[in-house]
Length: 136
Image (cartoon, rainbow, N blue to C red; front, side, top):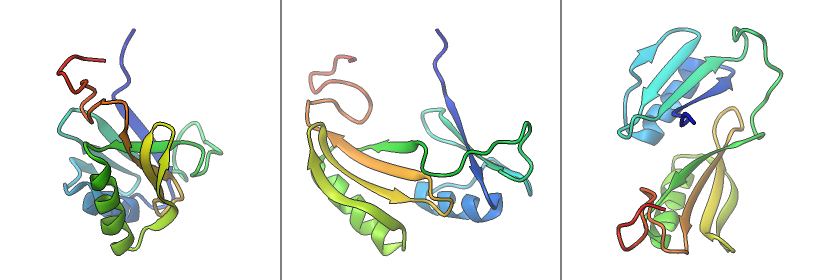
């Protein structure tokens, strides 16, 4: 089966959301237009921001129905990311919390899409490898 490598979020203003994600991801978009912004990350994953006013076919989806997830290597990195994002003014929906899977927090982007940051406590690293170097 094919592996998904591209997520599109429907946003109110691609320009505003592009600036938000550019600062959050520490990179410039590879494509920018009045209705669409595209980021390509180091691992090849693509994040598109499409104007909810021009997407075809039209979509009724709003933010909050899914999560964009960021895996980190250590539990203290979750706390550091929380401090950084709160300092940038992101709305924090859930402060750093230890849950059954590991340490996590949730923030919101300008369109109320949920951004989850986490560290798994089962030994899995952010790159999907086990601590012993094997793929999960």
